[in-house]
Length: 210
Ligand code: URA
Image (cartoon, rainbow, N blue to C red; front, side, top):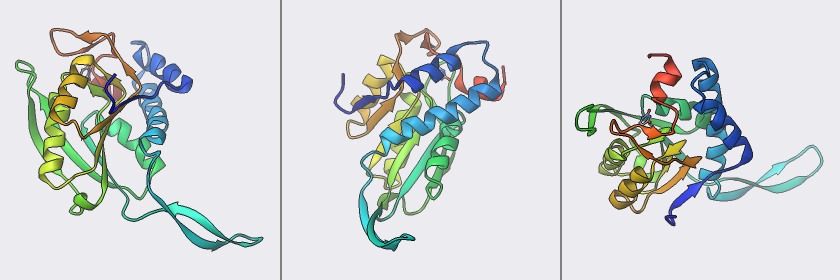
């Protein structure tokens, strides 16, 4: 196991993931489960956020209470399936800035093709959590992280739901500084770049487009 890889295998995550994998699970339930899992993954991804203290008054006493320190987060959603994880992360950290990176996979070459990019200006001063449910070949995630770095990001984590061993290898080779958080590592990729056993196309499962 790579030192910068964390598998969040909490029983609640495993249970929800099994429901998501089931091909009979409808889109509305799939989206809701993705949002719920994203809260649980986010809890681990953000475990070491720096805190400071602030003096406040409770109804009973004054106290020095912990509070998040400094500039906070950028959540970078890799479109379109990243938006499913983004929704849960925004529930957890409503004040986070949000970036969007639009990439699709060329079906022939499986290479990442960019069609949209919008990032906050002060990304260099913030921790960035890039989100995409599926780490398959690693091509689109690596390309997205290239764009984040080109725009100044220097503290980047990647959060996904499922990872293939091939994707983990590719991403850690391209970006060894980026910590990866996933709920599970599956067996392999098939000839079309899908994760096996996986859950199918995450975007299609979320939005009912197939
Ligand atoms: N993207 C998906 O949505 N599913 C896969 O299995 C691989 C990439």
